[in-house]
Image (tube, rainbow, N blue to C red; front, side, top):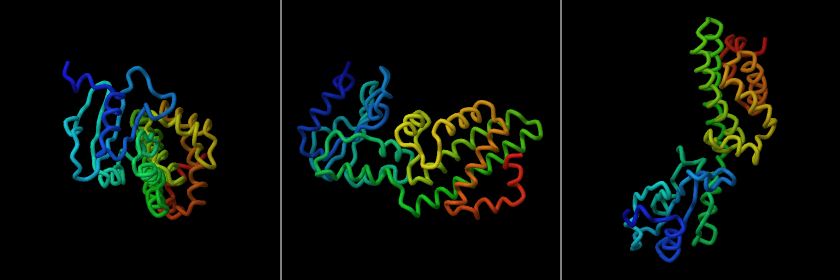
Length: 245
């Protein structure tokens, strides 16, 4: 086994702390979500380096084993990570291991965890339209006897719905793995977590039209209050297929 293959998380953290070129260390993923790690969970670690500073840690660039994944980047690259992008939620709930910027690393993470008002409004409108599109297709396919297509479209609608609901609260949407974890600790305003998760579970499993319509009624009311009525009104008479019978 090579030295890189045998490198442990604790051993690398010790090396990084001893290196003045390292401005910060940020742990993401299951290890950063209390109660979510298992024996199979590795350590996903961002290593934030001062621009142009010499470091012996460069030999670990691209290091990836079952124990430890390293991402090395400069401070500016770290600021840009996930803005926007798939990594945003992971960084929003990441844990600071080392911060040599007097809280600067933590402030960067906090900024990733909160969408600005304009971004959130634009994203919510786009996800609302995507949700309505998949919902409409699911209900239409169920009506016409295309049951597999109906269930697949129902599944698509759930991802858009979750993105929408979190955008309305100016938060990045969690990965599926962390959805229950996130809602248990940080509920969405105006939503009963258990009711929402039960509806999501039933729709994902069955695509039941009645459940989809009942959920849409709640979404329509909430999104109209949030100023997205024009997105819904653009669907015209097609809204009647989406609403409870």
